[in-house]
Length: 293
Image (cartoon, rainbow, N blue to C red; front, side, top):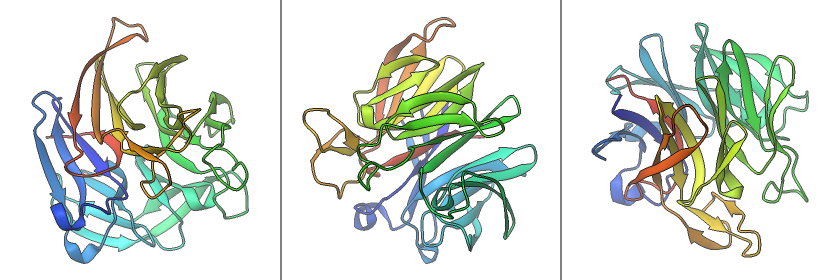
């Protein structure tokens, strides 16, 4: 596999420059070539916060209020869309055992989407609020697992250090004491996660510093590890903690793009193989997914 599909979120500043609905792109990780994917203007999106290949076609979550489910053909042409009513902040679509699952961040829950019906299959609590900022979903040999920021500190997640990843069926912890974790990913008997605000990602128990920006988006292809980068802001010079929102106070740092690493043998060690810069298309990358050419 030489090409991947990336999704962009919060793509405000690029409206006038590259189109109102630039939400996706196909990126060749060997040549660096980029094919932008535009959704028709009438759909009115700020970005894409989830994409999956399901039932022979691509399905994406359009970032709007409410979130929209976008149906795309196998070659990523727009087919149709409909609003995901009665859900809040849908993220991270996953095709799992014939089901299409998603994170409903605004209600601390995981839902199954069937055309225009939605069924809750797991919830953290009955508050129907975003109390832990659940944001990514994956599966490990038939077991679903998710990542979450954990509770706010002083009314904000900026300083929250209780982020974790855990299995939904038992609550068993996979990672803990993370800061703004994203993009939980399972590959080759190993879990990976972005510890985004700390500027690093973990392969199993081994942390790796991430120099390019706010780490979000993970994909493993064979021995190649791809990590997404977003432009962020450093709001604390003493800690270097980062937030992805460009409207936050602080100094903008980093680039939007894909960092490429190579795993060394079967260990958790890696070597850097380069960076594909996508800053000309967006500020923030949300996910990296396989592209079925």
